[in-house]
Length: 249
Image 1 (tube, rainbow, N blue to C red):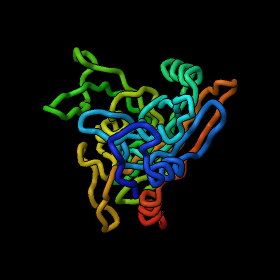
Image 2 (image 1 turned 60 degrees about the vertical axis):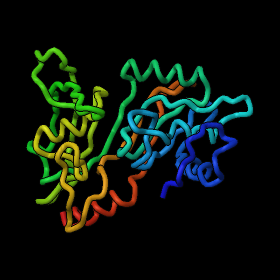
Image 3 (image 1 turned 45 degrees about the horizontal axis):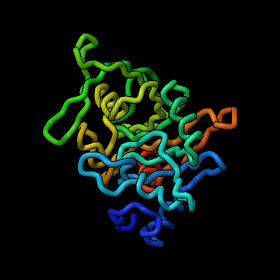
């Protein structure tokens, strides 16, 4: 369980519990990059109503010079999984340019309901638009000629299925806000636990307490050359739910 984070930034005022918690997220490190397995419920960076974030916790890795790892990309608050940081300004700049150049390959896993999509493997290319409602922001599907339309492309593949739900592997080729969530909802298979976009809140006879979406792998060019692929194991609650749903599939 996440410790109660302080609203301050420098590492000197992070508690030992906070420092141990964020260091426990590390799944890969070298002199250029630090990769973490972010838990669900932790915001990547500040936003509306977000005070305590992974970005603030990066002070736990700060050097005596005050330099700390910089987040290269973000995950939604309720999405778990691989998140990449650059340990130096040149590394972060290199990775940021690679991200903008769409040289990252992201792979997610999601539990959706009811059952598998049809066809079980396919591509969704429905455009999306941002919809502001007070302090909340949503994404909506829209027609390509809508003035606010943004192109969006998601590849999906069914990994396991039952009459009640399916486990999907997803690869977004664009990075729109809530893209995977809205695209899957648009084909009648919203992600379990996604109350915002109509996801099932009960599966296998038990409540689904959170969004069942996990950033399982990230492939990216490394600052030293070559390509690295880092994988993050699924959190226990998602793994156990999948076992209950698909054990007999």
